[in-house]
Length: 324
Length: 304
Image (cartoon, rainbow over all chains, first blue to last red; front, side, top):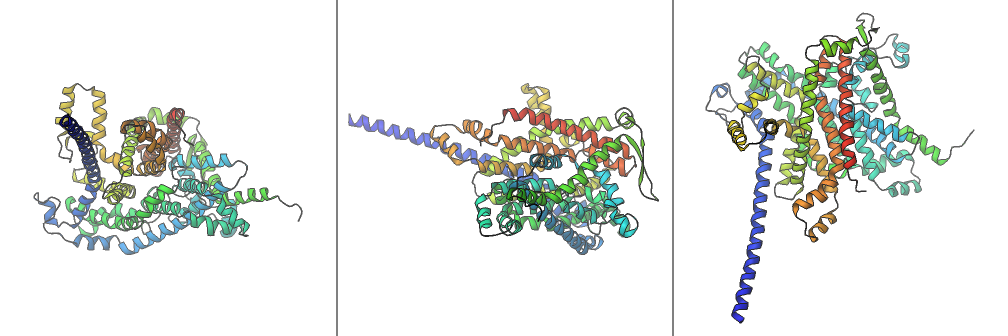
């Protein structure tokens, strides 16, 4: 009798074991599947980048060698030296970064201010105005491009310029239009940033401000020294988005005819032609190696900024109420 | 002091002060511009290059008639853009939701994978894409390689897509479904690069779901499948709307119609026609948005 019981017990525990083993196998299979998908997708994302980098360091002989795959036989940096010179890299990149970073600071100040206004104050037509922010996100920029172009070609707000200069000013070819638009909260994707800030400020507890108010802080002091400091996740999210999108923006750069001395992405568009004409490199295959070197150089600073900020960025997005 | 404001009125004024820069910008650059664009679309605009300024001659619906009936490629590009977007949106949404759920789990190397996944956001530089495409075009002797046919047959993935297509056809899958899947697979690169921001939004949404819901489901013995459809999916539903809106707007700004509007204005100096292109594309975007959001909104569950 006791034997039977032990046998039953044994089989039962075996059954449990098998059951748990089954679960383990299932978990294992799921994990393998997940790793496979993640690696696959990562490959799709990284493959073109690796290809560009490899091309940029291959020598001319490698470009024609069918045996070369991924690893060039004679890696060389000589493509970079020429491209650095032809693109006027350091000065162009410097002024481009200054352009992007100053615009970023304006974006942060203006959009957080407007967002704070929407989140914490009650005024008539607030809902309607906030709907206008959403409309701004939705409407494609090409709808307003012509009037904006005309406005800045003969820039004369309320006849002020005529009063000072005697004639409207042509701002085409300068960066001023971009600064003006950003300052007025209508820069590159400003609507989205206003939205992010509004949602974030709404999520912050009101008690902080009330405490500040009781302690005698004014509205501006509260905004600058208390709310903006607490809005770090939103600030970082907007920082990355703004840096990247402003850097990659070609629409406004083309529209305002901003010179390629300040916008490096315009230089990359003409790099191949420059190399063909100035250096008499006529083989398309070789030209592409130079082009790839140029692309690596253009992407480099933005990738570095992203890698430095990415940890805060992903945390920030999770907490910044981008989801409302 | 003639009249003292109450505290509420003061705060009201402060609110306006805070949003003032944006309000000016919105009225000056958006409201005014939209009205002007509509006006341009009904007229023939000639720029006065010497004295500055421009002249408008009212031509009624002539520009619209031209765009739809005379212009060679506009209607074609418009419909292909719209169909492309309608096909892409579900793919991007499901792909990004799937990816966000994967990235939300804890596993070794998650930080690295996340960095890689959001790279497309910072790589989406139009100038770079254009120059690469141009150089490829020159390599092929001036023929654009960007046709879907080419990308299927000469796919770099090392998988024989033709063979797989044959297998699925033998299985008796409906051809229309198969075609959809094939285009999806051959455009996987475009879909992945287009879904960076969407993954972020879904990831943030998934993090916001209270863990207690999953605990309850676990105690009640729900399977993973049930948990997904009964908890995860309804909870991220509002963000699916956000993502659909973002995807539609984003793909429309990148579509060929927008490029055409730009080229018509600044390449051929036909400002009236360009305004027509802009207005039609905007109206269609808005119509699709309202239709889709209206459809989903009714079925959306809001937790709070």
